[in-house]
Length: 161
Length: 420
Image 1: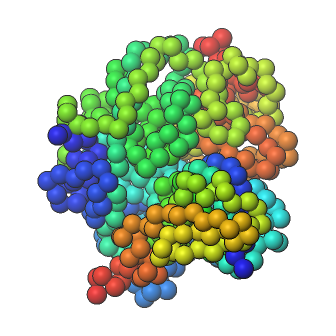
Image 2: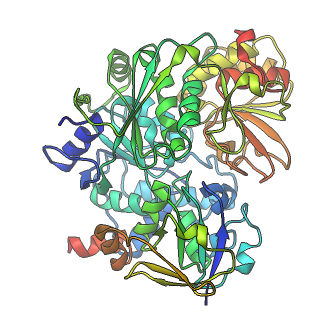
């Protein structure tokens, strides 16, 4: 079951996603223990593998630390659904082969604890317990190529061979 | 239709006649920055894939800065990984402790930034170098890894926004107050994915140091890059600082270039500004928060840790006592020595301040001035997010070096103009 962890707020920043006091390591499992710590200290206790984070505009603003993507992925989160993403976070997610969903309406219709079903190919988010669906524009072609390759470095290795 | 300066630089880097916003390009990189917090991860990624090469050992500039000198065992391990890699690849410009400094102050000062070039760095404030009519932007570790190996990176050509800065700055008002005003007007995502192009007569009066404060904070409006035209001030700085390669190409925006938005500012009306917690866009004139009690003043960082900033702070602190903990962080060893030679350290010492080694330090809550629960800090840095400088329940008030120094003297947010 894919559960939604909803933060109805804009500008959730990289300091909240992974505070700089933990940047002395780049170990994903270690970073995952502190994911969203300054926003919601309970998050890492609640989150289960395959769950989803839902937020408002400009998710991931601030620092270029890729640790933010690693902490979220390391915590088992399947994707982040936001109204918009900050540019470096967006880039880092794609470069890591981590699919993120930009949807202007879905975050308003999803509440904490809702059960979701996401179809990445069709671009739909179904809120199972409410019986409603939202559509989103799948990532552009070049981003999908990188994600399907498993990340930027895999993509480069493939295309340069 | 014409092109903007940003489009022209990116077209050149992509080997094309022209590019347009939204287009995806593969750009050749002229300078790649490498630092302690985000760099070692890039090396590990490359090593895990059996890639152990660098595209050009003379175009990668390495400096530890965020946690240097090492603040704990884990950051010492990061520095060790950085050091091993830089030595193994015989990186030509590797600034070791003693010469290492806050990257965005260090690179221009050491002559690594040239107009018309494309620069990337694994730090969000890499947009600083746009002050030199260059395209520069912050990226993550994976991008850095790709850049190190191939010397190229994909970019989506950004739309440009034009910010026209009219008039002259008033007494006691600085470029920091200008950029806080701009971000206050457009918001922290007001320039998301875009290039912020700053033009207008107010810039002509500004030193390169002051201009860098403006482009440095383009990211705080969500921008991909910030850029300022080349002029005689740029040329003079470059003549004094460029070392090996002294030639460069100057681009400027066409008259009929297209902008997604144009915003005008009368700089003569700008007041000293303070960005209240917890967003850089919460900018208000100092009068609106004057008197707010502080626990600490922090003067440093890639935004305002250059010699000009320290001189302004010293001018205000001279012959006075800081009423709160006041930490001065010269951004590079050269600035540190300059400040010492000019007698600024004596002024800071006499005023009861402490001067630290060059480091990003407490700007990002690393060390050298981290805040306790409930504490408030007036800071010349660039971000005041929740927990940015320490405890999640601490608060950061962003301001110019003048406002921070005046606030240090009174122990509360203070309009600096009465001390100037």
